[in-house]
Image (cartoon, rainbow, N blue to C red; front, side, top):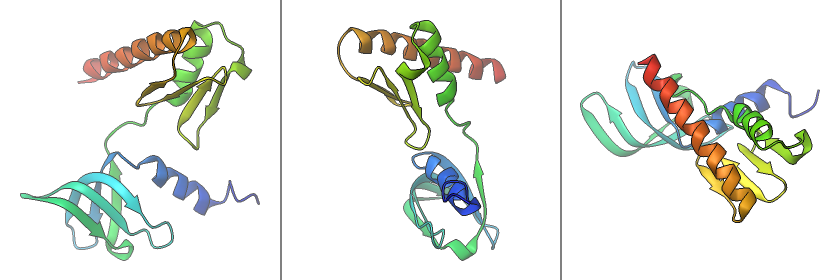
Length: 150
């Protein structure tokens, strides 16, 4: 079995995708911590959260040991990187090889020049400008969908 398909690898990748996202961690004692996932230890599942709320208490940082973690809850829907890659390919009339999706790195590379992540577009020039327009429209459509759901 390839190391990129083992259950442990898949689990760690899922946890890695949550870095920088707000999560809720429920402990075995029933406490609930809501905060930004900053770091974790893949061997012990110890977590570091920042900007943490626990009941009426607020903390700058909280470190939670893996053995006391009962549940990890995610309320944010993950960013649809595959959907954005498809939109870039369709709207810019590019070949599949021109729009490379690197799911593990959570990025898209367009024409080997422009880098796109959920945070924005990196690059300059006419290609980057066209990618930026598609990215902004994609983000606006996501925001509109969220408003409809509320």
